[in-house]
Amino acid sequence: MSLTDILVSPHGAQLTNMFLMDRNSSVMEFFPKGWLKLAGVGQFVFHWIASWSGMRHQGAWRDPNGDKCPYPEDDRRCMSIFKSGKIGYNETYFGEWTRNVLDEVKTRKMEEASKKGSASTSSGCACS
Image (cartoon, rainbow, N blue to C red):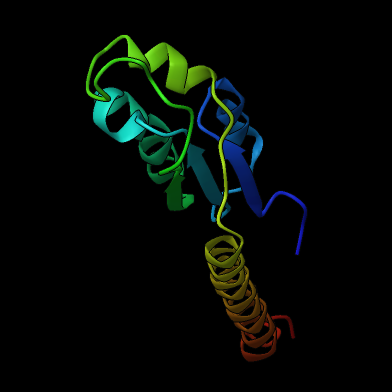
């Protein structure tokens, strides 16, 4: 398995690095609290880029417990507070999510290797 198979990152400009990855790579994305309510369709941009590039967006973690906002949580002023906040984690959820993604990548790599192996043995030599 190459190092470019899985990109794990919070939502942001650094996810543009996926353009440097191989097709069939996987992306795991993290969001701060409030992003789902306030970010609109922009929160899906890296999901779309992964799909258009032949990669697999393996889901997203949306932190339910991030920084508190002094305004109602659907108030647009909260976006800057949520955006600058730290993203928490749930160790049990992350462990299972990561295991599932790694298992899927391993299965995919083994299937690709077996296809390459069977193609080289079944094609035979056309030279006589």
